[in-house]
Image (cartoon, rainbow, N blue to C red; front, side, top):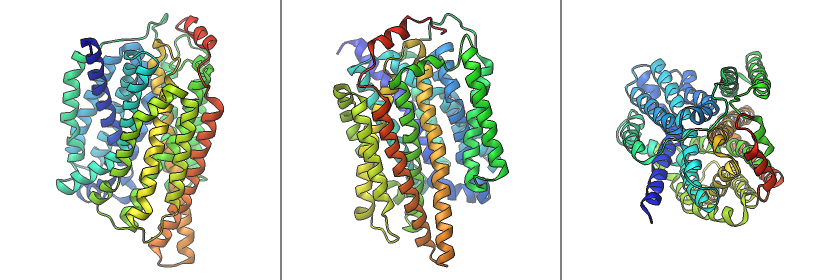
Length: 481
């Protein structure tokens, strides 16, 4: 292997480590919430804001982060994101009150939203489309797919062995190493655009619209989907997103060039990613509640339970990218989504007095296979045929699709589980564990249906191979089109 090749693969290790850190942090706080609640005197209602504050900024700014990477320089924005993320992590560990922790978690989400699309766009511009990029995206997919499960494991270990502050402090040395290696390993790149003006109106409308959407979805789980405030928030989000579409159609330098949706493979991949996020992100939340509130697992035991899932994702992500290289994402992604649906059906059958190896372990293995065969092909398809000038925006788009899907799925799953648990307890007073399990069962069935819909979308919209005439037309168009 030449020195240039070795440097590129070392660069991949750096950007994947940063991505893993961001995905890890989405899940790592979940098992530490009871400890944080006690130490910082959170009320039960405010406790969700530890997760929500991060999600709102992360999901809302991803699109903007992707376009800023194209305009300002991908390495520059990557480094800025790491600095913001690490600083916010340190401050979160030092938080002295509920309000300060919520604010620092929001700042942490902003850092993640800047570095994540920049990292993926660096990968896209570093590795040539085809087998080489697919291998790199297989590694990326393994990190993204296993990060959530690993976060629960690491969060449980740190909380049990030390205290909750270490779930944030651990990011600081990891970020320092990544930041030190970045100038040496990563080259700077930016989009070669005819118009280098910035679309402030488009950036403001998409960021505000997405942040309001995530907030509305999260709030709906507590205040109900039919409440006036929830409907008003959803209406405001819809109005902002509609305004964004109008602005982008008229802008000379759009944040999200609408023309990229003419690529069926990119569009299909993002539809599938939205439904993948909706069906999969919620399962970690529901399964963690089941293990801790029904089976009474400790934080550490809950984390260890996810090892089977994590190892399976890592082991089969390489197989997934190899299959995509050979037969295309259109054939692999529906298989992955179907495996996800099957795993969710197994979880829908979990009993009140469940046994790990008989009731959870088979579902974890099947879910690991499904995630490996979903995250990797969805990411590959979302970046296929995308020209270098749009690498950042395409990277921001696929990340946004997954995160917004996750917010929608979590809100829906939590609402369904709560509703059916409440109905069960009205009919069976005192049967708390059975009521919780019944609610989880129904929610898992709903998530399985969403996963199947994602598989159908992948098979119906993604092309077997990008049409040559579409790609050539895209590349021949002016950069600002």
